[in-house]
Length: 326
Image 1 (tube, helix red, strand yellow):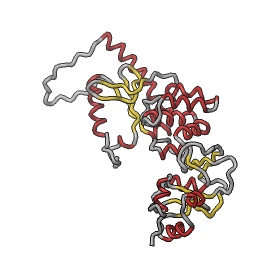
Image 2 (cartoon, helix red, strand yellow):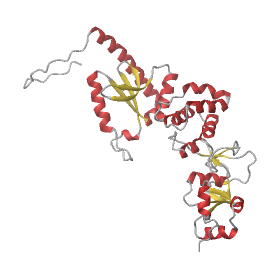
Image 3 (cartoon, rainbow, N blue to C red):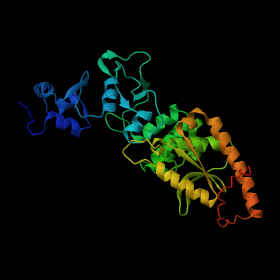
Image 4 (tube, rainbow, N blue to C red):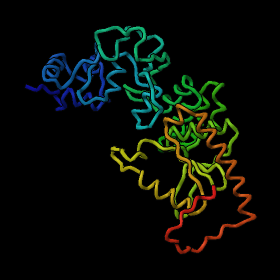
């Protein structure tokens, strides 16, 4: 039989109300007894995350793993729980107090945290902000700035602005708390980056000294990620641009073809680069952009001298086979 607290709230309801994770001593302070806890455990309405900690079956998985280790989700792992797209990560970031001990394996509460674990421990948590299972958004970004590369940090800061989870003023406060070596990165953050691939392209072309204007609207055609020349544009394509895309949103493949045709009619050129090219073969991407910019400059100068005039359609000769002039 389900045992309830005298006020009518079950143990699992109280745990959910308090943020999905509670210690035994906190539950006892609320008026529950070990009898209530054993009854809820037997009914599988709650479970032990680690010694002295309880949660519910629908608790966030990242929170379960972090509390099991002995801390809270932080850095890139925390940003994911806020719904922000982050560059691919290879570890699980957990913030623990500097005095923390008896850290456990994130996948087994009975095992000690082994060397080389997927859990990356950050000994920085002061436990003052955020839920019981994750740090605040500001603290997560602060951890990213302190531990990740410049490009990853810029992508995360831009995502926070793009998704309107943080204001410019709040981001300034985060950078003010960040290490001195990274505070100059603040000038490189852009809220116009719609994906981390766009951040990387923008920063890397800037490092190479190339021009780059973001989110350019071409009347009658649409918006493009970057304009790099008078008649040259760049699109950084994620998986949704593939014709075989099977995600929740529709594929943009057909729309991309229509826009490319419309731009060709205008005399413009659109370069498309995928994430595989961007991350795996940046020198080739850079060389293609450099050549496209050079061609654009020459073509623009020629167009000034010889403006384009569409030719009238000519009558086709029935048996003529002509080789192109090139």
